[in-house]
Length: 425
Image 1 (cartoon, rainbow, N blue to C red):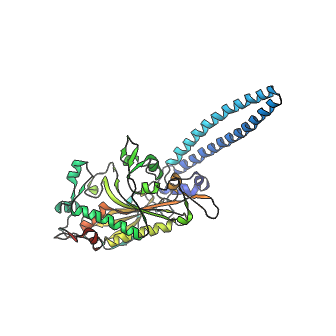
Image 2 (cartoon, rainbow, N blue to C red):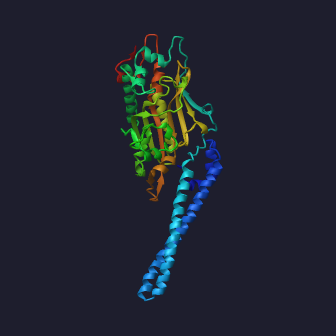
Image 3 (cartoon, helix red, strand yellow):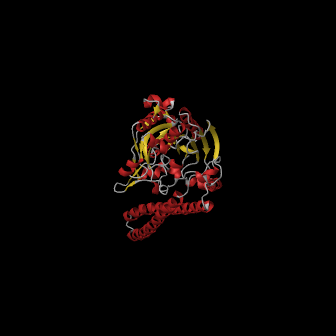
């Protein structure tokens, strides 16, 4: 969530950044929040004045009683009683204004970074880098949904029977390929200095709010209503919330964490050829990297994180491109996002396999995640960052399609020590 102080001090920048995200009536929403906050502060000032006066008068009553001035003491008691009624009314107004401010602030997305391009659709994202040659396959090449049937490595039919659409079984070499990718990604993260965590895959409402999935993505999350818990959409949520209500020493920054989890997304309304096969699932595996950083270092760290993800794709020998997302294609919580897309030769299109984002203080403000300055001893909000490193379904789809031959599917050399085989077929 944005900070009300930022709205007051940097009004024009906030409005400009929200307009880049195509927020309707951005200026009106910002000014409304500032107005509510001004009213809230005036109420609080009145409460403070009354409390000070009550404290003073209450002390005087005791003195008057000792001096035998009962009538004057009783008059003060009556005045104090009236002030307490007024104070209660102000407290009710204060609570109402706090709630009104919260409602005005919680709907505001994060402000887009200055480098974010304007735009409303994915077609307006900016290609900033590419690697490898996106080759078209031979006429005999098959899309991955036909390859997995041909080699019997992923079973959608029985997944649908057991659970429903979007919950496949991975079998034999398909299951081993999944495990190989997970172990490869975790080992690479360990080499890069990330601290491995195995987080819960169920979270409470406070955690969903802390990282911004709630209230924005409520309809996309699976909800265990009897327990008030949610299945996680990504390991980012529990790992980042691990640091909720925490003050971190500056000397410990940045915090670098990695975790593997299954991920769950309802993907309500998804349909069509673009979600066929592994292109979009309700349950999938992902390795996630998270960093908690000093505000002065977060954008340099963001570049390091995306280069790290690009390195994974290069080791897997997958042609890719890097996109800087336009304002209209970014998440509510992000200030700047890079998407990494791999080329699907059989589908003849690019598939997103990773998003690496800087949320600046947007999550940290909700999380009350801070550091204490070693120089001034004052606390300040930190920046949070995360990235997929990597999500498995579309990686598997691209590996199958790009590495197919007429006799089988070749496994990239970097994975062979993990799979124990070099070919599927």
